Amino acid sequence: MGVKIASTFPMLSYLLFADDSLIFFRASVEDCTSVKECLKAYELALGQLINFEKSVLSFSLNTSLALVDWIKTTLMIPVVQGHDVYLGLPTFSLSSKRVQFGYLLERVVRKIKGWG
Image (cartoon, rainbow, N blue to C red):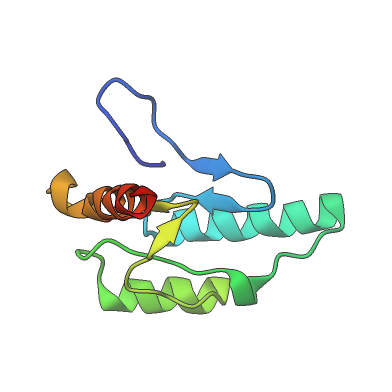
């Protein structure tokens, strides 16, 4: 199913970087089963094992604890409450962009003060 970033963008179901992948899916038994099958197919096709010790799951706040526990157990991946940053950007969205990206302004100001 994926996630909608903006009204004019198509649904996003994954992001691939150099050696990292972000997979977005609905917290449902069906989607979890599909993701597990895809990960197994990936391992078999490419001969690469997924490092589940470096993998984490994150859920929206309205996901039931029973479903979170079932998905965590099925995929054997730990759950985190929130991520810090990925590639220098926050991985979650706050309602206030000023608060969310305030650290960038602080870093720039600190850097400019260092030039003096």
